[in-house]
Length: 307
Figure 1: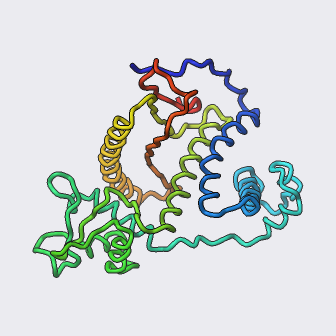
Figure 2 (figure 1 turned 90 degrees about the horizontal axis):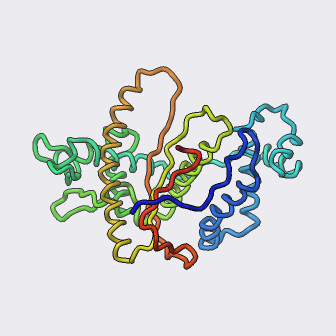
């Protein structure tokens, strides 16, 4: 049986008026997994407060028309609640450079092309095992060096292969072929890479949800939806996760094939440039007693701001 939540919903807020109480409720829930990340990796309160201050000041400058130098520290402080002395210090501080390894985007792009370009797929649409170089491959068959060169000529194929092997994404078989063992770029060993994708994926997901809460009712909404189920046994939960992974693998391959065409068609377009991210997640957690609902098997959730 498919149902929706029967709890009465409050009326929508008036357009254009801030809703700090509702925002605080949402932020409190978002902060729980963030707190788990902080505790688990030794990030304590004071450096976190400094990061929050910096984010508030930067967002006020970039998204609220305060990028010009004539915007006073007082105005930024009024919007953010950050003290004027801290605002001045943070505005004058040099921008922190991205310390992520330059290899990572290239490695991810190589995997994306490997699972989407028909020349690198078997008849059943699974990624082919590739010879490392043209010389090692059979005539007419694709090879890993060619794959890398189609993505970037700035990094050697051997360096990319070594990185993918280190991360557990590619396996070098006894017959010398490189086999892709992950359906997507999911590093198993690289902690810095995992943090990079956590930041990129979660920030873009949250940015989409925040965008949909814009005060402008005419603004286009971004896709940001999910479905959830309650009262599942562990065995059924495991089966659902497996099915979710199958659906994502198929959707990812189709999306990347479409994205490759979109990139080619965009090359001659002189207009503004955009970047996109399309993702999925599956969350499994033991259900608290006060959330158990035996009268509902499946409930579909939509953001109220994303009809």
